[in-house]
Amino acid sequence: LSSTLQRVSDLSASCPSSALGIPQMFAFLDGNPKPSLGRSVCVGLRLTLFSCVVAEYGVCENLRKLEITGVSCRDVYAKLLHRYRHILGLWQPDIGPYGGLLNVVVDGLFIIGWMYLPPHDPHVDDPMRFKPLFRIHLMERKCATVECMYGHKGPHNGHIQIVKKDEFSTKCNQTDHHRMSGGRQEEFRTWLREEWGRTLEDIFHEHMQELILMKFIYTSQYDNCLTYRRIYLPPSSPGDLIQPGLFKGTYGSHGLEIVMLSFHGNKAKGTKITGDPNIPAGQQTVEIDLAHPLQLPDIENLRDFSELSRIVLEVQEQIRREEQEREQRQEEEEHSQQPASPLGGEGAEGEETAAGAEGKTQDKAPASQPFVLPMGVISRNEDYPRTCRICFYGTGLIAGHGFTSPERTPGVFVLFDDDRFGFIWLELKSFSLYSRIKVSFQNAQAPSREAFDEMLKNIQSLAT
Image (cartoon, rainbow, N blue to C red; front, side, top):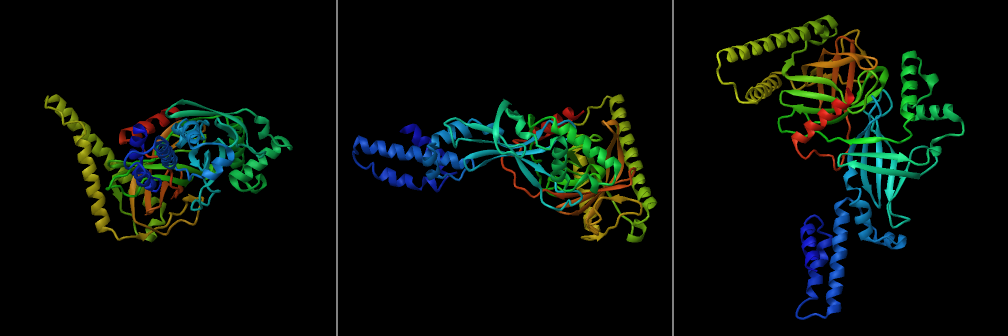
């Protein structure tokens, strides 16, 4: 009884509604209660304990349903929630360059793995789509049942192996459920409607057709037998330009992709969660230099691509000179044998300067200014905002097919509002529009800034 009381006490703060009956139970213990009454109170406390534990994992407990199925609260906790607690949260599947975004949640008496998909190209402001890939439940047996949800023939036998805390794998034991009566042609057309919202005949661009067919052939071979690695949402700081998080972005013939925006001192980074054969998932697609805001010309001159290029290349040259001066100072300090600055001192100064520069720019600049894409810059979505808050110098990663000859090229980061930004790729004469993914993901916060940085490093190393 004492151990149960201690556990209930620990959980009562997080489960106040279930703990309301505890004082009434103790009221029965006044004086010298009979042993049978003490046992009844103990049973009541244990029920409260399990109710709190179930609520702690986000389950809306339905005791009646549990009674019908013959499953106890103890079973739900011990055989489902506790056993599979390490797979809750956000994950990136290992699907070559394509990646993905999986969210594993507790839903009633189920644990479900939902694959999140961007809206159909080029509707970047539309909500995310999602489909179940697997589920785990205790509805029919006293042990957890894993079912594959891939395909169109309903749930079937699957398997989950937890490799380690931040990695697990799934396997379908009945892949024939993924096949369709019309063969690969029917499977491709069905996949195309789901993935792109159209038929192959609707896509006139030959290169785009090749990319789509390549993705289908590559991804369908996995048959939902995948390895997943944990990803975290980026931590936020009071001085961040906007709230960091996940965004949907346009990437030309590759369609919409998922990008994670995070802030690192005087830099902001966009990391691909989904990718393509040119720039795979895990790579840093854009980097924004928050220490170098750009002053755009008036709306008429902004239409002139050469004028925008001139402004950006001048800032690029300025950054190059600053880096040279910094290297020269470091060499002089080494030659003079003066003690070096404490580690991080220069970075901290850079962060302060960046914040100051950003603050000054925002003080001088109007709350919003007119914006239009220069002539000749291609955008998949013509419905981009016509006003922006501020712009910064940035670089974008481009490469050939198979991530060959990658290089960072200059560009313009355009902040439209709290939920949308854009990037002008000067060398490609292309524009990407990004819109925030407005989904509340549970169990996705990094335990520390160091853990988040380590996660970024790991997914990038796997992509190279």
